[in-house]
Length: 338
Image 1 (cartoon, one colour):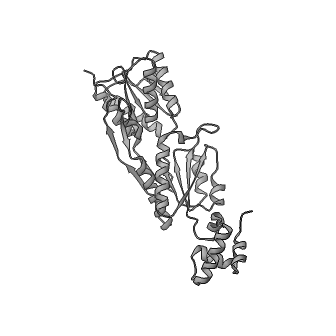
Image 2 (tube, one colour):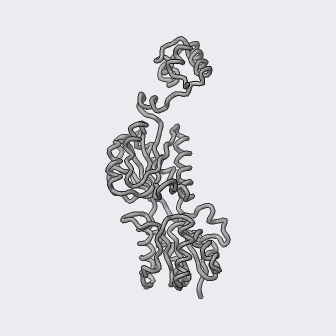
Image 3 (cartoon, rainbow, N blue to C red):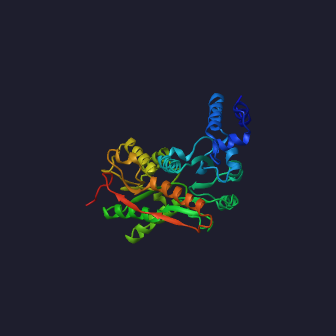
């Protein structure tokens, strides 16, 4: 049976309140009493209940992190290395400031209120886009919240993101400047005012500037994973769509597309050029290396933590939004047409 605070107090010969004072460091306790308490803690292998402790203190030193679950069952967006990197950054920078994180996956209909209240969260970081109802529910937690990669305009939330439309525009513009005109676009699920919809808009804008018609049959929509990238490439080639280049809305789609292209007997970039978006670490180790749009993924997590802790320290802080820079990374996956 797990030892309790009362067990520690009894063994040390002190009150439960004294044990709490020693563990929390809130009051000056004599060295002899402190030693007796800590000896009892060690003998009983006592582990404080952080949740109960947080409820009795002003803060819990616990930050909630919400990640999207877009598939039924056990398939989470964590399969995408992008999410692993941003979560790793959030955990690292939170830990440097004495905070722990509590990761929860949620679908579009899940309410986060119960968990936030039960665990006495000091703040929440939400990654990705959700329906408007989700944001209305989250406001009821009445604690600081920072959004990553969201276009929610509610004044309650802080936001850290990139200009997704501009990033996709840069990728498409580069392919156009290399002489390509038959350009497919591989994209995740298109939600209104979502990241993927913004990236599609950037693709469309670049085509328009080069007087290249936008064709819906050149746009392939699916999940953001390797398998979808493979399937999109197979569908595109199977339908004999005469593309010379693919712009993918995520590196994970681009990498899948490259595999699908190779499996059907074609080569990148000799037959079909490919450009990604994210600059995942893996993208630089491919053969050929993947030309892509670099976003500073780790910096997103860092800035989100810094902004959240700033609001925790300054409860009246007004809405802050930070848009991080993007950069085109040229590698060997795009052929220049003559």
